[in-house]
Image (spheres, helix red, strand yellow):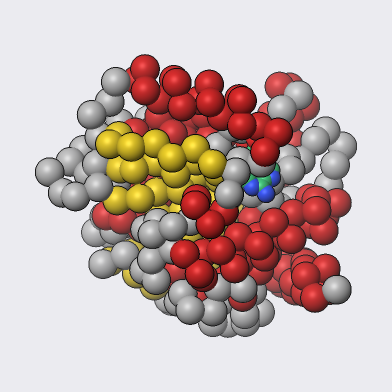
Length: 332
Ligand code: NAI
């Protein structure tokens, strides 16, 4: 057994955390032999609810959890953490656009960036889930100058999982056979789901999804809009935003940061843009990445179809607008 690592989950009394904590506690994220000390942050009015969550974690009777630290104090929550899931934020409600959330939420991430800077380990890996996730990750890193900016990533893994699932359903194969679906850009309705580099294993090794599907019209149209609007469809049906699927995606994302990507596979995540594929620089843009030794690298040399190019431009433009609004909110 390794020595325990401190892991913080913010929004710990909320619905995503409710599923995420179980995955972390049973070893799905950091490994079956990695004990964890769970730091659970939420706001003061949620402390009673958080107490109930703590009782349930205790009742899981999972030996990897060596200690639980519930708190409303960021200085306690971020102390010496090696991994941070920043989930806590105001969730999008029915009819609400993500932009409406921006001003309310970026300030939370400014404060948490400052707390990470002061109290977390300098090697901390920070995954931002709370929306607008890409811009929140950017804001958080700007206010944590002593932590490498590459350590801050934003979640588009749920979109990637949705894309894989749509393709598997269409091809009538198991979702495990579909790999390398890309999400470009922002985790918003402008995101660009792209299956042109994706593969499917039909029994004799991976082949391109495009060839197996033979349905470019679907890939250009319905596939993209279904994935883009899936979050809104779940809200319309459940009257609450995606929770168990979001938690699973957050676990997948941090798992891959911790353990690396499998040979020949890449995953999508919002990372600090270096301008690859014509994306604007210095925004958190979702790219296909490979991960080794807890460091990500943008996959280079993939073909971007002509019909995707204006979409990539539009999602990049939205991120620049969000960044400008966020800076305005944070600096005034
Ligand atoms: P929820 O409302 O059930 O839980 C949010 C929790 O955060 C609440 O307990 C709230 O008290 C807490 N919170 C609010 N401000 C906080 C602060 N300053 N510090 C600590 N905790 C704070 O919401 P849910 O469903 O768990 O969603 C959380 C976030 O994740 C939302 O912003 C949602 O839009 C986002 N989300 C992102 C996805 C992605 O793919 N990136 C997918 C699904 C949801």
